[in-house]
Amino acid sequence: SQQGEEDPQALSIQEGENATMNCSYKTSINNLQWYRQNSGRGLVHLILIRSNEREKHSGRLRVTLDTSKKSSSLLITASRAADTASYFCATDKNTGNQFYFGTGTSLTVIP
Amino acid sequence: GAVVSQHPSRVICKSGTSVKIECRSLDFQATTMFWYRQFPKQSLMLMATSNEGSKATYEQGVEKDKFLINHASLTLSTLTVTSAHPEDSSFYICSARPGANYGYTFGSGTRLTVV
Image (cartoon, rainbow over all chains, first blue to last red; front, side):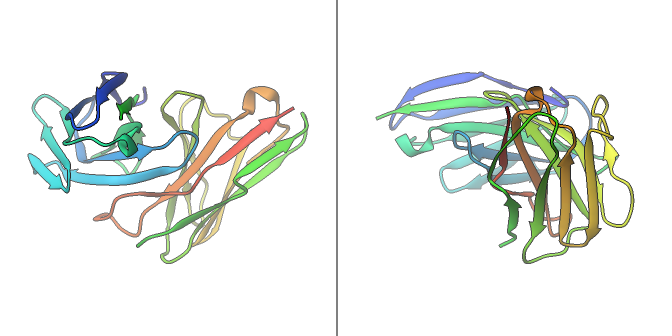
């Protein structure tokens, strides 16, 4: 990808379980964002974490950022079938405004 | 919240024709907008950065004469796929944000099919 990799590429869990997705990136960043995309649709912004932050919460979402390892994780707790979607991390390099996406994780939550 | 409108949502065109896609920021001004393309089951690839009042900045490997970008106002950027071919069939999506402290808002995307 242009900037980052995500793993796993695909994740299938039972409803109620937690889902963890990881993102690694290549260069220093200003911030990292997570987005969700339902099949064939546009992207929805989930959460933004700045480079000087280590953890952030929003509802059932928990994001961590480790700038020393150039990695981030997205945890979705108590998953629901409606969480089924692709999840992407995206970063903007601290040398410009360009915004690059990771490879994405396809999450399937089985009812 | 910030809203980005993209039009059309779906277009089918014949090989050799040109297609224009519009991206509008509805409730904020955007000096910069970004254009991405996405192939099925793949991530979004940044194509170019659209700059209001100046030339767009293209990513490596993106043909600027093929994908014409115009950002004539603070609320509108257009992407024109010129002389489209079947391999240009893809999902194109734009994004912008009201300021540096905001997340990016994406348009709903345009699915282009070239036949």
